[in-house]
Amino acid sequence: MCYAVSLLPFVSTTPNIPTTQKIDNSTSSQNETELEVLFHWEDYSVLAAMLIISCMIGAFYGYFGEKQTTGDDFLLGGSSMGTFPMAMSLGASFVTAIELLGNPAEMYMAGAQFWMICISFVLVVPIASQLYLPVFMRLRLTSCYEYLGGMKAVIMTDSFQTAVLIGSLTVVLAMSSAQVGGFDVVWDHAWRTNRLRFFDMNPDPTVRHSFWSVVIGGTVYWISMFCANQASVQKYLSVERIAQVRLALWISAASLISVYSVNFITGAILAVHYADCDPILAGVISASDRLLPLYVVKQLGAARGVAGFFVAGIFAASLGTVASALNSLAAIACQDLATGLLGITLPEEKGATIARWVCLGCGALSFGLVFAVERLGPVLQLALSFNGMAGGVALGLFSLGMFCPWANAKGAVAGGVIGLLVVAAAGGGAQLAQLPMPRLPTSTEGCVSPFNNTHLTIGPNENRDDEVFWLFRVSYLWYSGLGCLVTLVAGLIVSVITGTMNPAQVPIDLISPPVVKLLNSLPKKIKSALKVPTRLGSERRRSSSVRPPSVADDKDTRRRRRLSELAGGVFYSDAPTLTRGYDNFALGFDIEKPLPDNPPNADCIKFECNMDSSLQETSTC
Image 1 (cartoon, rainbow, N blue to C red):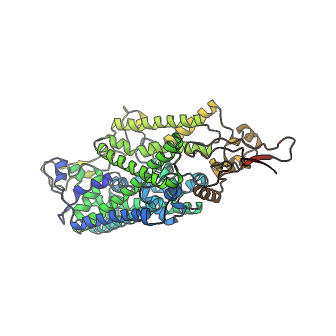
Image 2 (cartoon, rainbow, N blue to C red; image 1 turned 120 degrees about the vertical axis):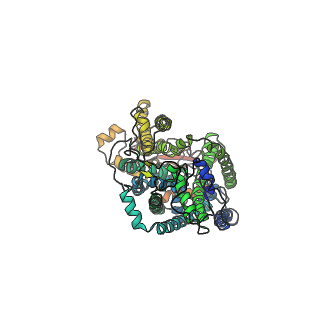
Image 3 (cartoon, rainbow, N blue to C red; image 1 turned 180 degrees about the vertical axis):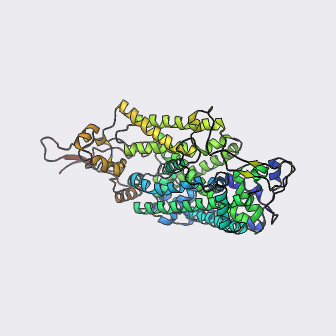
C-alpha cells in the first residue's frame, strides 16, 4: 500500500512531453515537485472503482453470502473453494508493488539476469508438491483469514485484483512498445547495451546476480515462500484435494512467469526511451523504482484513465500482499498465542467473529507502523531482505521436522536461533557496509542541462571491496539457502548431542512421504543403526487430533478428519492409550507410544476404553 500511495505525486496533466528532459540546476526533490499535480477525474474514477469493488466482494461474503458460524467456515472457507480462484489468489500474494516497480528498474539498471528466477518457479512446483504439500494436506491445521468474509472473500478479491493487475500491465506494455517503435527496436537496443545477459556462470557467491545465485538461491527462496509461509498453506487448505493444489501451483507459477516477463520487457522499453537521458543520473528522480511511474505519467498520461489504471494495478498488488500478511498475523494471534501459548479455548460458535476482530486489530496496528517505517531511511533496505532471511530459517525448521525424524525440540530451537543469527549478520553487515549496486552504463548526453553532460560507466557485476568481510558481500539471493542450511545442520548436530528422537515414535503424518519410502528401502543394517523400524509407518499412528472418550466430534473436526483421510492421513484414533494431541496444533504434538511389533505370549492386543462413565467395555482383536 505504501508503494502505491507514493505514485500519486507523479500523476501529470501535461500531455506529449518529449523524450528529451529539460533539467534545471535544482535538486532531485525540486525536480520531482514539478511533477506533483492531481489526477484527472477519469484516473480517480478508475482507481476508486477498483477499491470499491474489492470492498464489495468482502462485504458480500461477510454479510450476504453463506452463513459462516464456525472457525473453519470463516478461516478455510469450508475447504470448498475452486482451483483457479485459489491459484490466482496464491499468485497475487507474491506479486507485490516491489516486483511491479523494481523488476523494470532492474532490467533498466542491470539487465535481464534476474529474469532467470523464472526457472525457479518451475523447479519449486514439483518440490513443493511431493515433499511438503502431502504433510500439510494430511495435518489440516487451521489458522485465521481476513477481516470481511473470511477465506472466500480473500480468494475472490485476490482474483479480481489479479485481473486488474494483469490488465494494467498489458495496457502499459502495449502502449509503450508502440511508442518506441515496436519490440524489434526494444530487442535490438537491449542486445546492443548488453542487457540480454542471462547466463553469467560466475560461481562467486559475492556476485549480486549470477545464474547460480538467481536459479539456485531463488529456488530456495521461493520454496520458503510456497512451503513455509502461513498465507500460502492456508490457501492450499481452502480446497478439498491435493490434486487441486498441485494444479493451482502450476497455474500460479505460470502467472508469476508471465508477470515477471512483462515487467522485464517494460524495463527494456524504459532503457530505449531513456537511452540518452537517464532521469536518475540527471536528477529528475531520486530512486530507480520511480522510473516506471515517471514514464507512465509523462508519456502515457495523455490518454485519460491510463495513469489511474496503472496506479490501480499497483494498489491491487499491494492489497493482495497486505491481506496475506494480515491473515498470517491474525493466525499467529489466534492459534499460536491464544490457543497454544496462553491456553485460551476459543468458542466454536464465535470463531468467525473473533477472527474478524483479531484481523481488524492487526490491520490497525500495521497501518500505524506505516508512519514509522517511512522515516527509517536506509534501514528499509534491510527490511526488504527480511523475507529471504526469515523464510530460509522457517524452511529449515519445516525441513528438519519433515525430513529428519531423529531431530528433537532442542535441536529445532537451537538450529533456528543459530540460523537467524547467521543470516541477520550477513544482511545487517551488508547494509552497514553500504556496498554499491552495480549497474549498466547510462547517459545524460541527450539532456538539456546547464551542467556538464556525463556518461556513467560501472565495472563488472560484482560486489568488490576487499576491506569488507566476505559474509557481508554475499549476494542477498543466497540468504534463504544459507539460513535453511545452517538451521538444518545445527539442528541435527544439537539433536545428536542432546539425544535423538526414535523414528518409530514419530507420528507418520509428520514425515514427508518420499522420506518414508527412502527409509523403508534402506538395508536392515542401516535401519538398525538409524533406529528405523522394519516398516516405518506400518502402525499408522495419527499425527493430528485424538478424540477423547465420550466426546463427540464437532462440525470442524469432522470436516478436517474427512479431508485429512482424503490426503492419506490418519486424523485420529479411538484408542484410549492415545489421550492427547487435540489440545494444540501450533506448538507441537505429543509423542505416542507405539504398539509392540510382536507382543510376547499373546495372539492379540487388548484395548479397554470408557464408553460410558458407568460402563467398562473390553474389545479384543
